[in-house]
Amino acid sequence: MNAGEAPVVFTAGSAMAHSKKHFETAVAAAQETGLRAVLVSASPEQIPKNLPSTIMPVQYAPFSVLFPRACVVQHHGGIGTSIQGLAAGVPQIVTPFAHNQFDNAFRLKRLGVARELNDLNSGQWARTLGELKNSKSVESACRKVKAIIAEAPPATAIGADAIESLARAKI
View 1 (cartoon, rainbow, N blue to C red):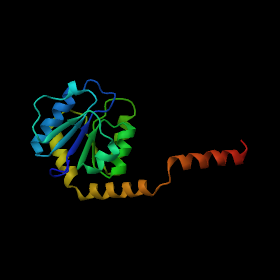
View 2 (view 1 turned 180 degrees about the vertical axis):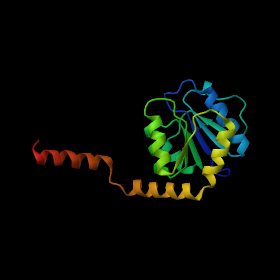
View 3 (view 1 turned 120 degrees about the horizontal axis):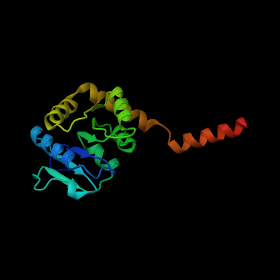
View 4 (view 1 turned 180 degrees about the horizontal axis):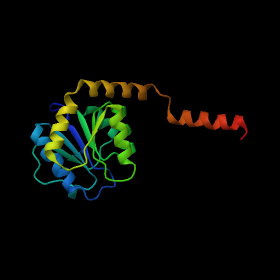
């Protein structure tokens, strides 16, 4: 991680057992842009073989530690991964494939911190990586959202306050 410029982090999510094409696209996009990359997958058989030294596969890495060290994060749009990207203040490429991921992608895009790409097209991913990495408006939006999250009270406190409020209302 410390051997150069911040890498792109690519992950297809923990439920994606058929992500070989996803990671092939990621490797091609990273090579096209000349960016270093980390491929996160619990399924090592999904990772292409013979990776260049600039691309590191890992089976697990805590996103709370990894994402703040990334220049861009590409992921599936799961809510946990999305919020970790927001908390890290890093631009995101979202490639949704099921459930609430499409709505999460829409909301991240609306916040100005992400782009949604629905095709596994390495050229498109490479262009979008460059745009996100170099965009001052995306950088500003990421910084603002990160600050809001950092200043917010813990979710447990918000939940406890809501329960206490309901108890006082004697519903």
